Length: 318
Image (cartoon, rainbow, N blue to C red):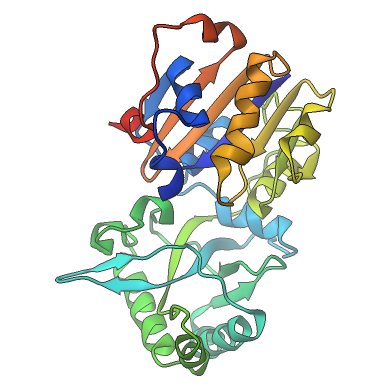
């Protein structure tokens, strides 16, 4: 079995020490560092084209129960902008978790305000926020994972219509400021939704059976589910344990790592054991770290490279 794993390195994973399972895997792997975020890498590997964004929103919206048609779609992630000394930064997590009642109340306010501008905010079945636009905007956006924790100025929409979209964002922020749903959130200790983050814009790609040698896609994501539909391959929800997948006779599996704590012990350690025991013939780790990706290719024979000692995980991104 060949297993490809896509994983975003959060603070817990990037801080792992040299004795961790992930660090041991990286020590033996063939490593390729790319100056592109993980979502970009995934889109390219599935043969998608940027124009100028990759059409992540349309693909996700299709799998999220929305009729995408020929409209232009953007992700409109609910976010919290953090005031720094002389700028705003994009806080994590992205998007914020919002209960449905509060989300519907905020979306209703946004749609009431922007209805005359051809902008329609919509909530998908997963709870994700999208923006349907009547006319394709002449802008390029930045993925939230690239901008997280940084001064947002350089990551704002760029292009011919950038000034209009900056004005839209300013109006969104004014509408959300002291919104009744935000007042409730803050009173219960939750972060206020004080803006949205636009990204992944595009129309639904006219592609079928994308060139991809994956036999099955395993994830917990509407974007991956949409990719599976486009590529014409089966989609399965993530199992509770890696052992469940190891019992499969499928030749090639691509998996999205779950967004949970203790991933090294619960997932990377079983991967290490399965690779050493040759239950996995080849393991490819696509590790995203903000604007960078690290591709690690590992086979059982690589563990004979005893001279390669492991280092803290963050060392592999320097």
